[in-house]
Image 1 (cartoon, one colour):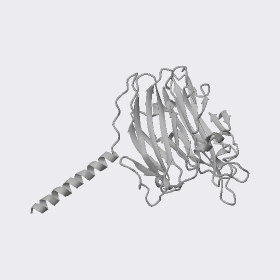
Image 2: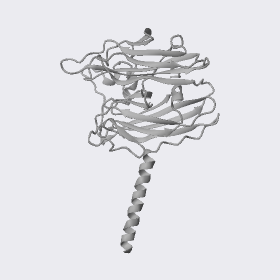
Image 3: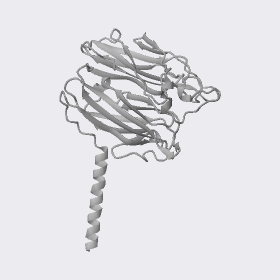
Image 4: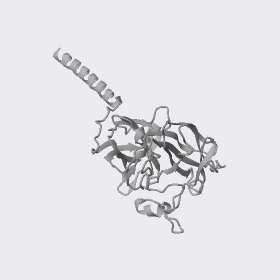
Length: 352
């Protein structure tokens, strides 16, 4: 009898513990304590997050409070972000580390696209940081994301992604730092425009309606674009293509995203290939990115085009390489957000 009572108590205890664990893992984060004008804060978003490709075990490496998507290549969590009184900047600290296969080789030795982005219900995701992993090397970045602070709110659903095909592939750490800065004029609002990691020649222009609030005095489009190809040769990674942005049917920007300084990151790419002509894979100029570096947003002042009211914003890439007889093709990773101020800011460009 005593044994039976003990077993019953253990069953109830384990059931309660399991219920509490599920509730803790799925409950939204509580709002953080507001910051004073001189206060700083650091919010850990992901610590040792393991990203991988495993269709049979999507959540194999997900931890409590995280949800796995895209066969394990995306993890989602919710964090409390402190609201700041007075001018503050927000920085995203990102560390990407290849997981070791042996003492001499990582599990994934190739350069992979990745990002940290906000998940907004019913709206496109907003990229805080887009990065490209090194060829099997560790990378660390601190990226100013202050312009997107209005979208963080009290609680933020954050995704981290690496386009890996290894199991496991990469380990990622992400933290948000909020620090006072009297030189920065914080924006009054921000809104997503578009997000896709697979813009193809078969797609029409990406389109969004943007409502600019009354009283807005400056509007800026924050644009991230990188060109890629499915087979690692030629277009669209190594051939410049025009990116065209229009507002209400009128072209307001035409830009060719391009990076010609990739040689600077050779030391961060320990497993890049050296070809017979003496060149290194990491050194090649590319459509808006380099292996082992973050992608710098392109910012357009569209105050004259995005006046208060509703506007149609479209984004397209011309001449994307179509699918060939071998099944290979070119594609682009595109995202954009609009940022607005209800005053004329002293400083709106992020220092690079």
